[in-house]
Length: 321
Image 1 (cartoon, rainbow, N blue to C red):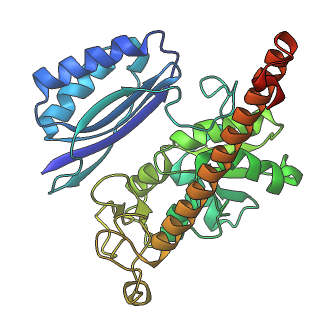
Image 2 (cartoon, helix red, strand yellow):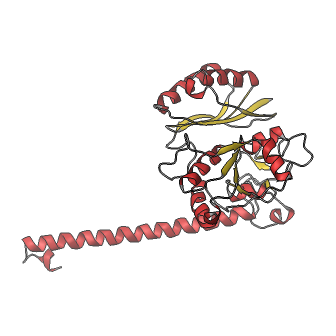
Image 3 (tube, helix red, strand yellow):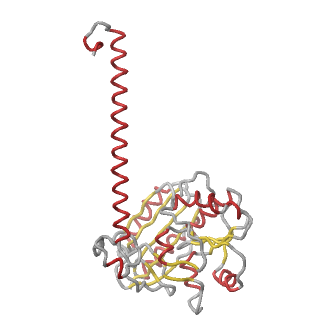
C-alpha cells in the first residue's frame, strides 16, 4: 500500500535548478518506488508523491534538512493501487500559476483558519463569504455548503472574477479554500493587494479539513473532492470516491451522461466531448486568424520591397508590376 502525500511551501529559492538536480539524484538513489511530481520555482516548492511509507519518510527527512523547508508539512492518505505513473522534478516560473506579477505569496497572504474554527463558524451561522478558489469541475463534484463558485476554467481567471464579483465585499469576512491550500496562498495575497481587509484561508485546504473532521457527523462538506492522481477524487474520509468519474474531465458520470452518443469509456463523456469540440473550433479559428495575419504581413512586406525597388530602379518591370 502506498502512502500519498501532498505538500507545498512559498519561500524564496535562489537556485531552483540546483534543487532539481539534487532531488532527482536523491530520489533515484534512495526512493526507487517513488512516483509523482515536484515543482520548483523561485517562489517555492509544490509536490504530490506516492511511495511506500519508508521512502516517504526518507524523502521527508531529506527535504526538511534544508532550512528552507524545515517546517514543511505533508498531508497524507493511503491507496492500494498505483497512484502516479512517473517521477518528475520540474522547474517552473510559478509553483501555482495565476499569471499576475508582483503577488507576494511569501510575506502577505491571509490569516490561516483552522478546521475546528471554520467548523464552529459554520455551526454558528456566522456572517461570512465562503469562496471556492478551485475550478468549476472541482466545485461541481463537491464543495462546502453555501460556498460561492467562481466558475473558472483555470486559476488565471480567478483575479478577474474577484474584481467583478467581490468588489463590494472588501471589508466583509471572506473565507477561501482549495484542495491543499496552495491556491489560497496566492489568491489571498492577490485579494489583499487589491484592498480586501478581512480575508482568511482554511489551513491545509480541504484535505487537512477532512483529516481534522472525520469524527463529525456533518462537517459542512457536500460531495467529494477532486485529487490529481489515479484516484481522481476522495470522499470526506479520504477514501477513493465511489462515484463513477470521467477520466478526462473529472466530472461525475450519471446514467444520462453515459447514455449520450458522445460518451466513450476512458476517452470522453458528454461534458468534455462538447468542451473538446468547442476547443477544436477555437483552435481552428485561431489558426485561420494567424494564417490571415501572416498573409497580410507578407503582402505588406512585399509592397514595401516593391516601393523601395521602385525608388532605386523606377524603369524596371518589377517596379511597374
